[in-house]
Image 1 (spheres, one colour):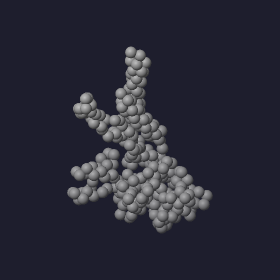
Image 2 (cartoon, one colour):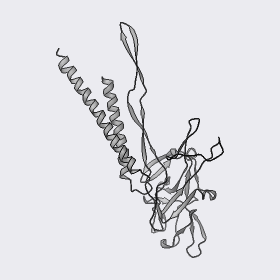
Image 3 (cartoon, helix red, strand yellow):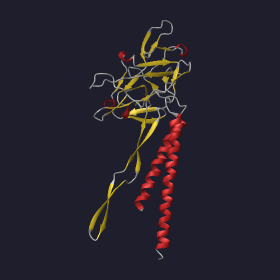
Image 4 (tube, helix red, strand yellow):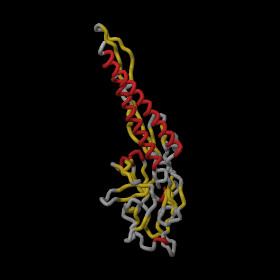
Length: 293
């Protein structure tokens, strides 16, 4: 009986985390560049239950000992591009591809940006991010391209981080903000001649986005840049990654699915709660009623 009590309690904790994840997604439906989070649950190891009578062990069967929320996984798929008309607003239009070594063609990723090979290996679609830097000099990544300009001309993210160029240095504007022009490759153009100024927005490509860690404020970091396959976009990537000036990227949260997940987590939490109430009632009878007999 106690095993069942612990199993139901583990289920309540898991559903609470699922509920929190769905709530977070719904709260960020209108957050620029927000990436949906999905909660992944996993069962505890099964145990073999046996009956012991007069020194004889008789196997009964296997029993699962509950479930727990193992991790939260971000979905980095492209959100809708929304036209803002502001010269300091930018969005990334990216559809990066990988070659399948078995066939030589492009890997066909599913709608979640994932591919499972015949050997069971999971491959995630590479993603592109704007590169920013915090006050401690740490490199971070974001899809929120709603930038501003400081009094000294530095291009800043909505969180106040410095926007880096392709050379790894903060982008500093020399001319007025209204005349800022950026082409599809992220090159800053001269307002009068339209020629490239030699400054290019630092668009980073993360080959293995599963290595990204969410920091809040719409930014991510990687513990190991080599393991994540971080690199700046090169000239040959302009067919797969383009910078759109005057646009921002909306959240990629599926509002309908998030609402369904929210209600499902609530109902499952409620069911586990009723199981615990049943065990509590049974234990009370065992102690107060059966004990007196």
